[in-house]
Length: 196
Image (tube, rainbow, N blue to C red; front, top):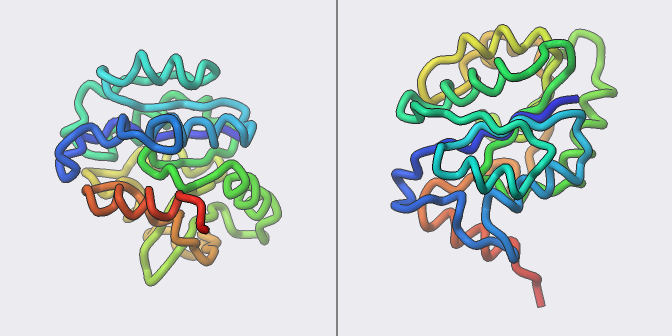
């Protein structure tokens, strides 16, 4: 199974590059890439900005680094670039680069549930109160479907259009905790710190 990590956002609401913020001895993005690498995906595609591309290559040597030169076109641009970099023959997963609370064990557990999914279900996505989370897992046929995604909403509308094929799982907090603003970052740091 392949993994796409989307890491080319503009960090406008954060006010600074959120993926380079310190997190658990590394950065937000290096923490995400460590988890992905530990979960042993067949291949890893990281879609990132020109600024971060050299760092990504150093943090996650097995990854194919794809540079999004036009991040202002929204998350769907990064998604398209990542999907185009896949062979199209294997199932794949998608994770956002600003979700450092997702661990390798989460990826392995959800991948296991995806591989054991019932007939007729072609995707597995965390869901909470009508909101889709990450990581999400897909059969190869979703590659062409998700290439139709538009704007900054990524694949959410595409998922809704094929809702009967989507197996949803109850989402843990960390599957919805992406870092859009300083308060999100502070909350993630708090959740990641050891409890006394």
